[in-house]
Structure formats: C-alpha cells, structure tokens
Length: 174
Image (cartoon, rainbow, N blue to C red; front, side):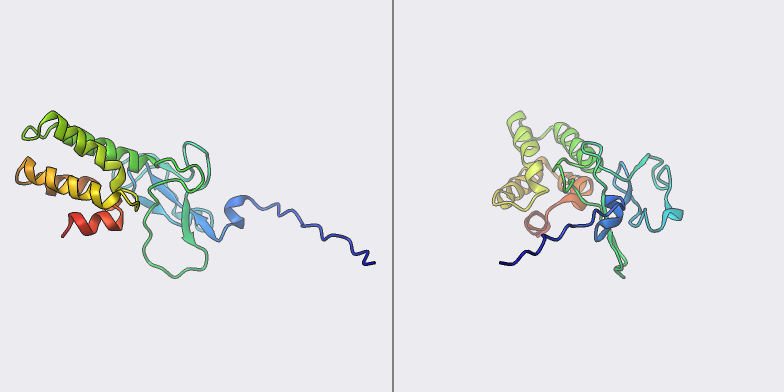
C-alpha cells in the first residue's frame, strides 16, 4: 500500500494583484487609461485624470476586485479598459456613464416617438455585449437613429463607439 502523504499547497502570501498574470490598471471614472501597470510601475499613477480631471480607480467599486491591466511581461503598446468587472459582472463607471449619456441623448431625439426612444434606450445594453441579441439590437439602433435625422447616428456613435461589441460595430458602422 502506498502511504504517500498528500502534497500540501504552500499559501502564496503575495497580494492577489501580484499573483495574477495581469497587472492592475488605473483608470479614471470616465474611462481614460492612466496606467495599465499600476502595481509594477506605480510612478505613473495619478490621483486624477490629466485629460478630464476625474478621480482614478484601480478596483471595481462594487466588489473591490482589481481592474485587469496589462498582461505581465507583454510588449503590447495599447490597452483598452474593460467594460465590465470580470469578478462581479457589473459595469465599470465609464461604461455606466456612457450608457447614461446615450440614454439622455435618446430622450432628446424629438423626431422619434416616445416608444421609439424607449426601444432605442432598451437596445443600448445589448450593444456592449456579444450575445445572440446583439445584431438585432444593433440593427434597431441604426434604423432608429437614421429615422431621428441627420447627425443623430454620428453623435450617438461618439458617445458609445469605444464600448460597442465587435458584432454591434459591424452592423452599425457598415
């Protein structure tokens, strides 16, 4: 009979942000990337955003998990802050603020009926995710904004373009 003892795993006492394959990002609440390597390069951290003056965060306001930053050791030159927290699934402040601005803009589109404005606002959440409903939401979004008149689609794209899922971009930007 084999009397080997089970191997005990050594507890790693490093903080979670240092055990992950990803560094922690620092992002302003409006979505501007401040430092995609906030732990390994803290000298680039800022309390406030130099682009808009908003406060910066390094963790999810809902669950306090670190914001996923640059892959450690990566030579990539660009970083895009995530739209949603990978731990709790909640929208980060920049995502929530863009959605709020888009909904406010939809309310200002006088050429649309109240029910059209509601449909437009209801389609916004699906535009940020790649789900089976995304192409339908993107098609509705595009048609309603074209109905709203010249400039409506361009203005709305400026509000949400950075957050759109790839599927939505293909339908809307065609």
